[in-house]
Image 1 (cartoon, one colour):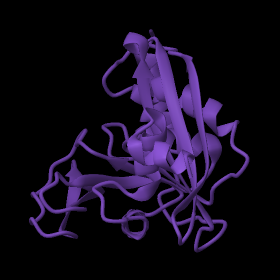
Image 2 (cartoon, one colour):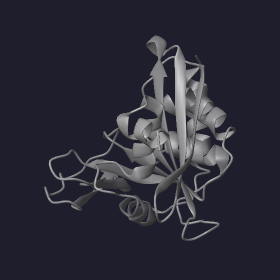
Image 3 (tube, rainbow, N blue to C red):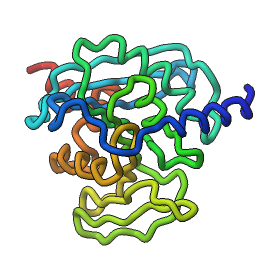
Image 4 (cartoon, one colour):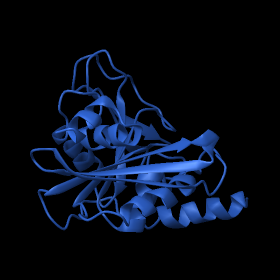
Length: 221
């Protein structure tokens, strides 16, 4: 694995990320959520994509792609491992979204190219990164109340928000993926909440991928 070549590609793609609002439709009619996991000891990459109608946030379509994992886990280069399966799932969709929320980082990455930015560039859709853990940057812990927020800063640059989405839960890390500003990224995550820690698009993507009870109940009508 040529790490230097991957790093160079990251820097090149990061320079292509559009960090301001560039929506085709506003407000979005369809919002997607994406989640990636690994099965069989990492040999299989599983990507789930869901489409929700906005503003009802009702699930209208879901697809899961499973492909042979293309590369080993290398910290800081996860998007190269995850994007092929996401693309496979994307090609299965009947509907294409106006906005996409990805379980992972956008520009809140050492080289400003997390999976949300990488995949957003590949499909050229406004994209937001919604991560459960920090990858880089420093921040002051937000207050305990729902809605408390702090800037995530790396080398003097704000790269995201640290946002308390639910009481007694760890905060989320929200960042620009592609074609969405930092302020708008947080706005739309807030607009996709329904009382859980995660916004509905990525919560449903996780539920579909892992066949959680909520998804199985939905399938049964």
